[in-house]
Length: 83
Image (cartoon, rainbow, N blue to C red; front, top):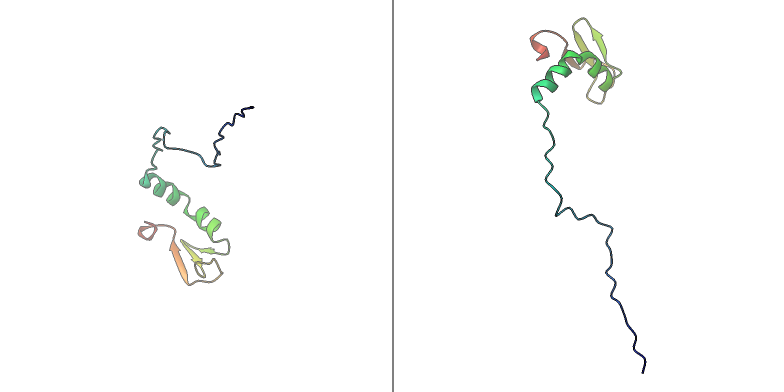
C-alpha cells in the first residue's frame, strides 16, 4: 500500500501586515513658519493658484475661487489685510 504525503500550503495575501511595525512619528510642521513663508511669497502663491488673477497696486484681484478673471475677490498684498 502506497502512502502519499500532502503538504498544506498557506495562501499568501497581497496585503502588508503592519501590526509589528515600529511606531514612526513624522515631524510636525510649524504652522507659524508655514504662514510666514507663504506671506513672504504671497503674490507668487496667488499667481500659481490663480494664474488669471491680476495685481493692481497692493491688491490682487481674482474673478472667483475657480480662478476666472475679474475683480470679485480681492486679496490684500500688504498691510493689515495681509495677515
